[in-house]
Length: 360
Ligand SMILES: *Cc1c(COP(=O)(O)O)cnc(C)c1O
Image (cartoon, rainbow, N blue to C red; front, top):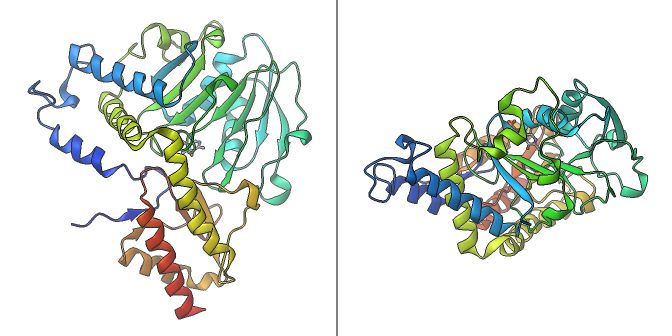
């Protein structure tokens, strides 16, 4: 069977060489006589796999030594709670920037633990832009500043890293991580669910500056405490071993490709193909402010929404799948994560052109 171009927002495509290697190694990993799924997480083989994965991630991100990498579970959604649980450190409030659906989820969860100051919001324009840093109203007494670097549903992406002075910067990078080079030193904490650019769902990565670890108050469940996770090398309990292994293969694929600089070049080219097309037609429309458009998730609408169903049906028949927009936004959404090849974007733009000529 031919593989499709999957434009889904997550779980998303994985690089084909990674899937092939996993298939080859499925029954017998490197002569161990076992699948990685069957290995003890404390055994020599898996410990080597996890250590290599961490080393490769550190190399890809040129990560400074004073950051811990945690392989966790529970998705980015669990981090919405773990962030305030771990970082408040006796303070009573945190600053949040509200740029859409995922920001709102993070804010709602944080409110269970502290006072939330909305430092900036783009709700006034249906979350179609990133509020300029000059407009933010930060509280110097806040425990941290949280923002969502790429809004997966709204298709709004920060093309810059905010300066928050002495207050630690925290970001939900689920749908942006590894799509471009990153200056980790600007952050106190970066977290991401794996199922967009890292690997299979079930793994969540947190990158935490060491000085922020160990601030949890009494009554903290062990599994949610960054310090306990860090002290135990993310093996306080059984980690999601197979997901860590696949993530490791993805990191090696990125290294072979030439690293995150090369990945960014490709992602820029992919995004340009689609946006250039959207900008020269009246038939389709992109709602997002040009300078804040996401390279990863492109929501767009058809001028005539009555054609949505037909568009999706015909796209699907060509192997261009999961283009339906999120229910909260409607229309279409094309997610062009790292593993989606540029040929997929070309095929999409070609189809969109044909559809326009037929129905425009
Ligand atoms: C997908 C996504 C989430 C939710 O991740 P889960 O792993 O399902 O908890 C949170 N934030 C962003 C930006 C996302 O893209």
